[in-house]
Length: 196
Image (tube, rainbow, N blue to C red):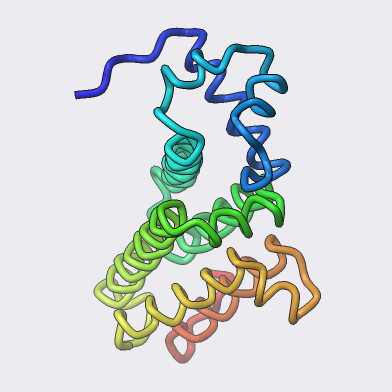
């Protein structure tokens, strides 16, 4: 069981997360990090045993926090279309905090990439649950929910890695908006207005 963080450690992790999101972490040494955060290396070692472990901890913290904030956005939304739209808008907002350098470093380092991939799979599972709910409520037409969710997951991965947005010349937020439109229009039942 992990020990509870002190207030100073929690503040350091918050500042470290902001630093990593802005600049990435691959190029930073522990000396760089300690200097930037105005703390000792031993303070950092109290958070993690190495720079790599620190990166894993911070990346995990970022994705966990993002998932919690996205989930809060959809609490109480009974309209499944609004739930999907709000969920994807939340993902876009969270990703807009991450620089291209951060996303590249997360992808380049296998342990953080694994965290990232778990997050993308969890997002696909949430979308699958939303789709299944919409089909059961007859809001959406009968579809293969797992297939739709996997396709959405691949698109989310393309957005998160920057491949899709770079090719299309759009921002993450625009890409997530388009994904929402694509999903909702593709799931729409004949004769059901999207704006109902």
